[in-house]
Each structure stands twice: as C-alpha cells, then as structure tokens.
Image 1 (cartoon, helix red, strand yellow):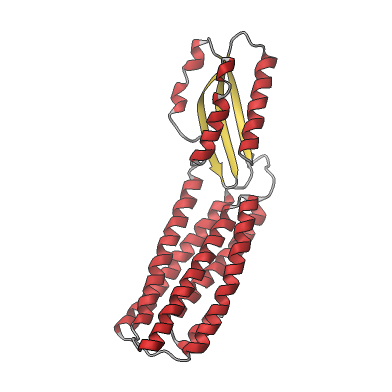
Image 2 (image 1 turned 30 degrees about the horizontal axis):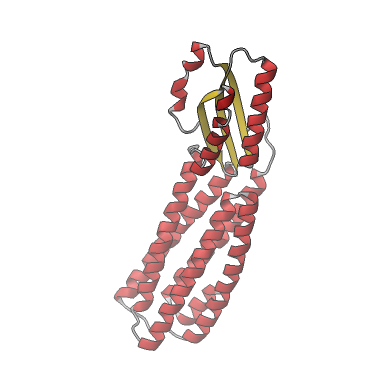
Length: 281
C-alpha cells in the first residue's frame, strides 16, 4: 500500500516510509522462522536450549533497518538538491493513512503477545511497527504541508528525518542483541528481588555469595553459593535450597537457578569470594 502511495505521488517521504515497512516484512519472516526454532527442546548438544536464537532475529532486523536508512539517504539527498513536484497527494495520503492504521493494530497485538510470552523478537517487531506508525504520521503531515505551501524541499527533508529516526532505532536493536549474546545480567529490579529472597534467610543463620545471572532471551539463568550453618544436615540444607529455588522461580518466571551449598564455618567456603565480582556467568 505504501509503495503504491509512493508510485502515485513520487514522494521520497512515502518511499522512506515504504522502505521501513519492507524491513518490517522481512524481519517478520525471519522472526517467524527463528521463533519456530527457538522453542525446540534442549538436547545433548545444546543443553540450555535454543532461546538465544531470538537475539539473531532482532539483530537481523536492526541490520535491515540500517540498510533501509542508507537507501533513504541515497534517495532523499538528490531530491533535496533538485526538488521534484508531487502528484496526486490526496490519494497518496488516504492510502498511507489506511496502511498506518493496519500497522497500529498489528503492533498492539504483537506487544500483547510479547508480554505474554516474554519474547524479545515479538517486542522488537512491535516497537518497530509502532515507530513505523509515528513515522507515517510525520510523513503525512509533511506531504500535506507540501501540498498547502508548495515548498517541495520539505518532502526530502521529511524523508531524511525518517532516515535519522530509524537509524537510531536500528542501532538500539543491534546493541540489545549484542548484549544478549554477551550474557548480560538480568534486569536490576529482578536481581533485587532475588537478593531480597536470599536476605530473608539471614535470620536463620544463612549467608550467600557468588550470585551470578545471565539472560537468554525469555529465559533467565542464576547461580549462587548458599553458606549454611555447619551443624545442619544435608537434608536440612537441601530443603532450604529447594525452598529458595522455588521462591526465585515464582518471583522471576522462566528462571533456572543452581545453588551450591557450603558450610558457613569452613574457611574454604570463603575462598571463592572473587566470584562476587562478575555480574554474569
């Protein structure tokens, strides 16, 4: 629809908007493939599953956005130097407005699904589509002003602004994907929730250290050393550890936590405190 609007009007602003939608389409196809692969169960080779594949999807979308931004710049700059009058502006505005309403509905549906499943690609695609909606609104306003004022250079100016906007969007998506592949720690609020659970056992004479976390798309992995009173039996320690793990899984869905039990009064239990320095594993 947006491509036809560009064909009718000759507006590079609408071309920029159409290119962004083309990126959305390509990214959605890749996302569908990646999501179908990422839900496969773990196996002997990939014992932690395939959830990290989702970062490749959002990374691909970020790369496609950068290519679209380059195409916009290459098209808009010559038009800025040598402006061209627009044609059939009214029809172009109507078609692009209809396309924008469809994108808005899809973006809302995708965001609801992203929150329900904790999916990075679905969230990325939803945010990109919502950005597309605002982009279209800006382009339509710019084209309407061209029709009212006759200032033809406003069309390539709007296209360049669109290019700059999606350029930063693509950079943010690439950065987030890179962070995910580098095993960043879980969000600060979730980390504080875990620490609060562990701190609540202090009155029972238990300490902890070496709390490390990492994210793999919608899954979270945690490891912690639990320092328990030396007189506790293995059964007592195991029961407390099981309770802690259950509380963490309840507080942070899709979490996998591994606990390592150590006697509080054994000096060797404190020799691995250097593990407290990293924030991820």
